[in-house]
Length: 135
Image 1: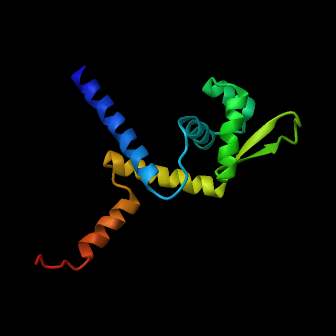
Image 2 (image 1 turned 90 degrees about the horizontal axis):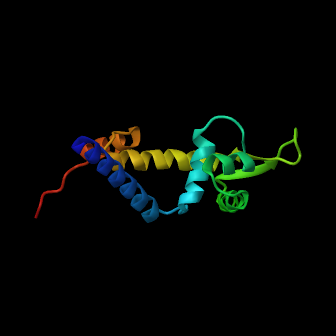
Image 3 (image 1 turned 90 degrees about the vertical axis):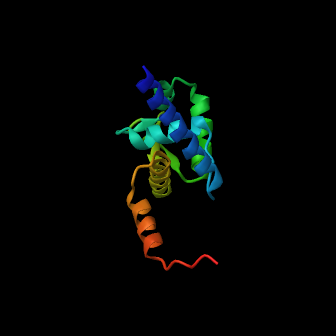
């Protein structure tokens, strides 16, 4: 049980460090609900609808609509009427959203101590940089 508690503590610390890094950087801050909608759209395959997201996250359709309003303002996702069923609204990914997900993955990897290509490149640059003598 101690191992499980330790793993859980590590996950919570990674989450905290990730959120702190996201808040400190230039860029949008997303609420937990907005982030849940964003990650569901980007990590789960298939077409996403407001109705489907509400069911998947067990929240109301108006709550999903508000989250999508914010994601739309930030160009992290967009809504489009389903041409096959005009009553349904599809949620689409954007290039900016894909870049945001890459950045989130990188920040989370750093928070977890996982080596990422960007982190490895930064370490290499720092190691190659001329060192100044302490003085």
